[in-house]
Length: 298
Image (cartoon, rainbow, N blue to C red; front, top):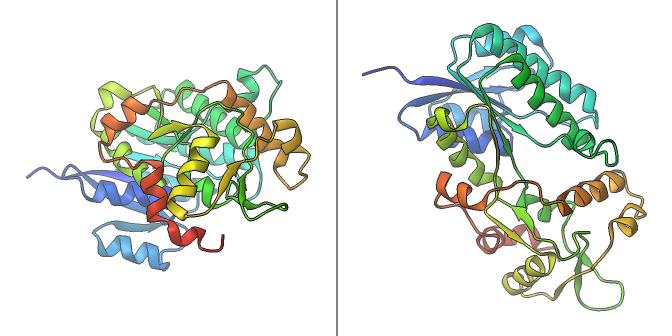
């Protein structure tokens, strides 16, 4: 019996890293080295119980990262912008892992990346939580690390920042999403893991490429219709413009408005490929049905 190839999973106790770690644990050819800042967290202990090797590692610590990657075949990396609202810190984390991957000769890194919007739009739009990931993608590829980027638009945004808002003038809710009538891609974070495992299993097809994941692309009206049907509430498309959205004034409003302006340009997300990578990928309707509890305060 040949030994399994070790894949180090950064942020293994988070939702995306956890999805990847659990999917790898179900695969016969790979084993998981779950990397986390706190090995005593319930999520870390649960992964250990499922058969993962759990290792303490801080993404900001170069030596810890090197130690955590030693002897690994590959790695799954997710960098974080929202912890500190710092693009610079996120890029630094990515570079630390890229340098260590190069030095240790990792055979395949899958990075949860996104486009460098600022570069693509020649400075017209700035979306720091995209741009930093785009810089990290470029750094990996320029360094010659065998890397695949997966670009993920989350359904989970509808449980947080894009959650329906009670209308001030009646007994209904608004989806305040400045997407005009342009379809917007989405996928559940739980479905990212199985898709990533398929990518690890086919390096010859995916090395050096960016893969845009999406279960389906729907207009805001279609998202509203599905939410209304499943939750039994009246939910409407607020039909807000990016210009009006950025004037809402909360932290990050400008950034989200710019992100939506970029989404108007239809970045490459591949529904057909996503269904090939993970045939059981959930529709938005299934996702809402499974997460009714998260909408119970509506």
